[in-house]
Image (cartoon, rainbow over all chains, first blue to last red; front, top):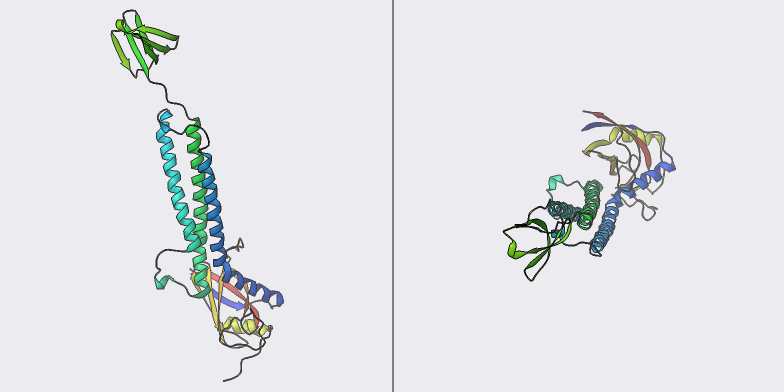
Length: 206
Length: 102
């Protein structure tokens, strides 16, 4: 805290009267202004987030299980943080626009214009936090959508088949008339299943 | 009981000196001061909030010395001739506030 003292100021003129009246008007209307601005920010940011959510549905991969590991978990974590940021942002913007939803202790409330100023300072903090977190939410949502669309695809399940003539490894294309067709690194190979002496699903092919 | 003074936008060097000696200043929260005392012209008690920041992009660094224009904002009397939307008796003056860390 600071110890304040008063001394006579410089001679006053009509401009000082104007400044004093402007200051009073600013002080008396600042709470009303920040409430209105917070409502505008809330609507604008809400529209941006709705547009982003709609944009993410336009095209691209939508199933996280199509992503290679560990990307589904990464996207899930990013989405989780994004939703948490969005939830806190929404609450902060509502706090700035409409005030606290709980009672205040009388000893903490200042009377008159100073009380309004106290509430304006709190509302401005909530507004700044809400805007920052809403933008964070939007950026993280974009990151999650981008990772889902352009992240590495999960490999097809592969099968290793051992026969007396050799070992074949690749993804299954079809099974017909006792013949298994595999897509291997050397191209498509047909394996007579009657000659197979061993099979290993989910193997990593060389 | 005397009639209230008529509304008159006026100043006098004595107003600042009188207010400097009779007004009290209190820091109610960081950056928010309450300056109060009797109006040097009409004698009605007034309370002037002085803040270092106000919402609307207008910011002033929290300096340790502030020259603050003050006008009477008394509500006790209906000063004759006061225009609509105005407050007080019309007197105004400047005060200098100096802050020192405790």
